[in-house]
Length: 71
Image 1: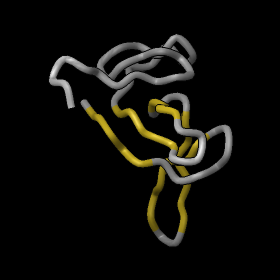
Image 2: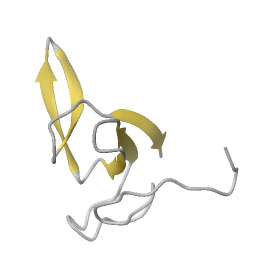
Image 3: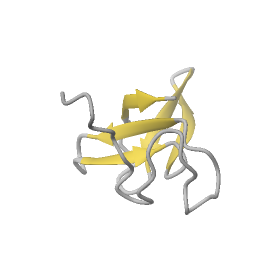
Image 4: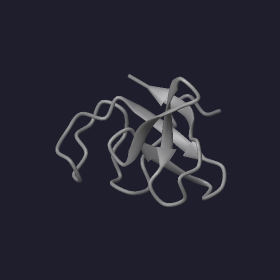
């Protein structure tokens, strides 16, 4: 991976450490949805309890997201 590359949310455009234009909150993590093949930040996805653990889910398809970058 290129060291200069920074992941960004495909929904709001924010990178880790920036403010999401959608929620006006700090973006702490970027996730990847393998079903939608898009990156989403922690502000443009949602967290839910599943099988006793908190998981981050895609707003578009409700799939479990994989964390790819964090603050």
